[in-house]
Length: 323
Image 1: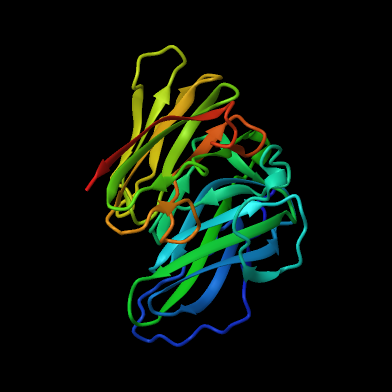
Image 2: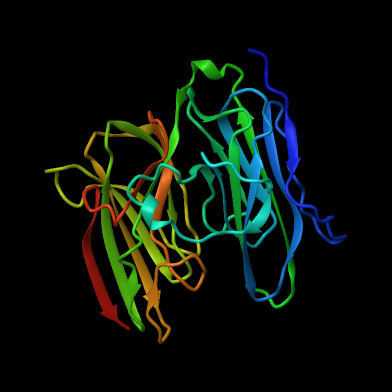
């Protein structure tokens, strides 16, 4: 099969503001694959901006993504690209926050992420193991989400590039997909306290983990992930140990880490709340999150577990210490 052509897609209508002192260098488009671009925009001082871009994948043949590059201007809290089974008009809007209640049990219409960046990074380069790729159908409906956080007094510019590099022989590759394990309903961090919440979510079938990425917000001071084996010794093998919000780290497993059906990931989020207000789950930097996600294979789509699915995801413990 011949290599698919490279296509660049500009996602917004604003011209790039002049910035002569800027040393930002956009990446070259991939030789075979697609490049998604959100052109430069302004983020007001002391504010945050989250937007969703709706577009169709510009490739004309099915591709298998084997490498993903993210290059963005500084200030990016996160970005993601997801596949949707629902068609949208092309355009850019404020994002609808939250998952409708009727979708929480089936997940059938929830967009499937094919890439989600680490927190507070503006460059990332992900290469999948040999023989594995993430599928992208021709003309697939995509949702590109970007979230900028400007802690400075002055305005800053945002700009985002995502390169999907395609394999030359996609039919020979095994499909990889994202897993996402979250605590949503039980995040409640008392004022003036350090609070640790431990959750376990399970895998429905044998799999191999390619990576694991922690996601939390600015109160986060620690994030660990362990491999839970039913009936095995606690606390389980340590797979990830991140210092939290300031320096989150994605871990790549070489070779991929095997998990068996009904094995799980036990993840602990630790927050330090020095404010006089309790803090709960939410999308802004003043709220909190507790999610571990990464690539795994084999699979047929997004593996999404959260604490409202008590059969497959449950609370192990909560520990609160007053400051």
